[in-house]
Structure formats: C-alpha cells, structure tokens
Image (cartoon, rainbow, N blue to C red; front, side):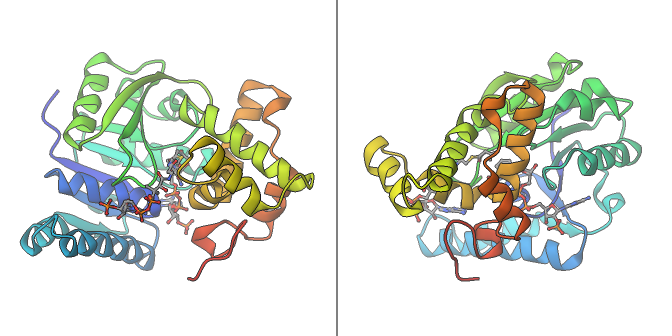
Length: 285
Ligand SMILES: CC(=O)CC(=O)SCCNC(=O)CCNC(=O)[C@H](O)C(C)(C)COP(=O)(O)OP(=O)(O)OC[C@H]1O[C@@H](n2cnc3c(N)ncnc32)[C@H](O)[C@@H]1OP(=O)(O)O
Ligand SMILES: NC(=O)C1=CN([C@@H]2O[C@H](COP(=O)(O)OP(=O)(O)OC[C@H]3O[C@@H](n4cnc5c(N)ncnc54)[C@H](OP(=O)(O)O)[C@@H]3O)[C@@H](O)[C@H]2O)C=CC1
C-alpha cells in the first residue's frame, strides 16, 4: 500500500481530538471534522491545551507545538477533508450515524483510501457492508486518553485485506502505539472485559452495596486500578458505556451483559459523566 501521509478524523470529541493530536505529532497532515464549527474549535482548543502542557513540561519546544498545530486543519464539511489516505471515524457510538458517515466517505474519498473506525464495540463488518470497498474497511480502536494510552486494537472485518491490516498496524506503530490484532466480535477484547466490570460496579451502587466513592476506593486500593470503575465510566462517557453494553447484550445474546437500570437513568437525565459535568461525580465545566 502507498505511504499514509494524510488523515481525516471524523468527530472532534475527546477521542477524535486525541487521535488528531497524536497523528499530527507523528508527522501526518490531519483534517479534523465535526458537524459544527463550534465543536471543531472546541476539539482544537483541547489539543492546544494538551500541547501547551507538553511545552511547559519541557517535552516539546514552542516551534514543535506550532508545527503540530499547523498540521491540523479544522473542517466542517466532509468533502473539505476527504482527499486523504486514511479516515479514522470517531463520531458518536451509534450504528446509524456511523453507517451514514461510511456511506458518505465511500463516495467522497479516493478509491485507495482506507476507512477505519475507532468504534468501541460496533461491528466493523456491518460498517464495511455499506461501502463499495469492504476490503479497505478496518477497526482502529484507540484508548482514552489517546496521548497517554499505548494500545490500539486493530480489528479485521470479514473482508479486510491483509495489506490494509499491515498498513494500519504500521501506522499505529508510527503513532507510538502498540497494535494488537483482534477479530470482529461485539466489544472486541478491551470493552468485552472492561464494560462488564463497570456495569457490575454500577449494580453495586444500584443495589446499595456501597457508595460510588467506596466502590472506587475498593478497586483502586484493592486491585491497583489507576481509576475506580465509576470514575472511569464518567471519564469514558456514560452514554458511550451504555451504547457499548447494549451492543454486548444484543450482539452476544447473554443476559450477563444487561445494562444496569441506574446507568440508563443517568444517561436519560443527561448525566453523561465528565463531558456533561455530572455523572457518578460532579465536575467543574
Ligand atoms: C471505552 C473504550 O472504547 C476504550 C477505552 O478507552 S476504556 C478507557 C481506558 N483508559 C483507562 O483505563 C485509563 C485509566 N486511567 C489512567 O490510566 C490514569 O488515571 C490517567 C492516565 C488517565 C491519568 O493518570 P494520573 O497519573 O492519575 O494523572 P496525571 O498525573 O494527571 O496524568 C498522567 C499523565 O497523563 C496525562 N494525561 C492525563 N489525562 C490526559 C488527557 N485527558 N489527555 C492527555 N493527557 C492526559 C498527563 O498530562 C500526565 O502526563 P505526564 O506524565 O506526561 O505529565
Ligand atoms: N470515550 C472513550 O473512552 C472512548 C470512545 N471510543 C469511541 O470513539 C467514538 C467517539 O467517542 P468520544 O470521543 O468519547 O465521544 P464524544 O461524544 O466526545 O465525541 C463524539 C463527537 O462526534 C460528533 N458527531 C456526532 N455525529 C457526527 C457526524 N455525523 N459527523 C461528525 N461528527 C459527529 C459529536 O457531536 P455532538 O456532540 O453534537 O453529537 C461529538 O462531537 C465512539 O465511537 C466511541 O465509542 C473509543 C475509545 C474510547
């Protein structure tokens, strides 16, 4: 496959912004797209703040910071960023939204372009099926926060070509990450293991076993987790946690993945965790 030098990132939320930042830091030209100018600007602002911290800590010069920012091109219309070698889609975890994006990307992007999704759990094979290039569709699942976490799950859809897989693996390495090959089943590996733990922690609160702070303290001090499961759920986003659990529940057909009613209640209330200012904890906006 040709060298990957240009990337479009779709969705400028916490994941899209992180992916754009790390890609630009590794030398790629990056187009960052979201559905409104305000959202793209918010994404770029978060990247700027992250880079400023790197400069303050002496890990990057002001010139290097500027170089990274210069390589990030904010856009609102997909057609303004479609002339790339690879797209990494990081929009909301919703199959209908993602299918619509993949259909559009397939029309707009050059025939050789790879279409990757950062989905946490949705079937890559189903996204591939809405395009005329299913062999060039793949999962590239980064972990949050992207600048810090080393793992990328590289997910083969049913039709993914070997050279496409190899190119994405190499790109992940170029971005300073460790790629792990995973097949296309609901939740892949990371979230199939992580989300049932988070769900169980929510059940502990729902059933009155312990308060959120105490559940988190148990797992931090008792299992050496860097964050407690409820703090982590707030960090991921409770809407994303619910969406992943629904995919696991429906896709694997096992009642053990049933999302806790308390999680659903919080999401319906708009308590989405850190990004909305309230979840299991409250956050300054
Ligand atoms: C849902 C999915 O599909 C898959 C997923 O991603 S699941 C989520 C996976 N992620 C995790 O499990 C994260 C668990 N938490 C942790 O590892 C840590 O708490 C953490 C790395 C987030 C923060 O670490 P910490 O030691 O508590 O805090 P802190 O000292 O402030 O940060 C450590 C470093 O991370 C950086 N960092 C923290 N949050 C960051 C963010 N949001 N963006 C960029 N950098 C960040 C800090 O700048 C700091 O960098 P330096 O060491 O270079 O100074
Ligand atoms: N949060 C996490 O820890 C992780 C999440 N992921 C996955 O990454 C993806 C993004 O998650 P995350 O960044 O947390 O979510 P966010 O809610 O932070 O960001 C999603 C962004 O996509 C935007 N969006 C919605 N529809 C479209 C569209 N049609 N075109 C372009 N942008 C759109 C949203 O806009 P608006 O707000 O207006 O809807 C929002 O700005 C999801 O698939 C998620 O499962 C993967 C790994 C970890």
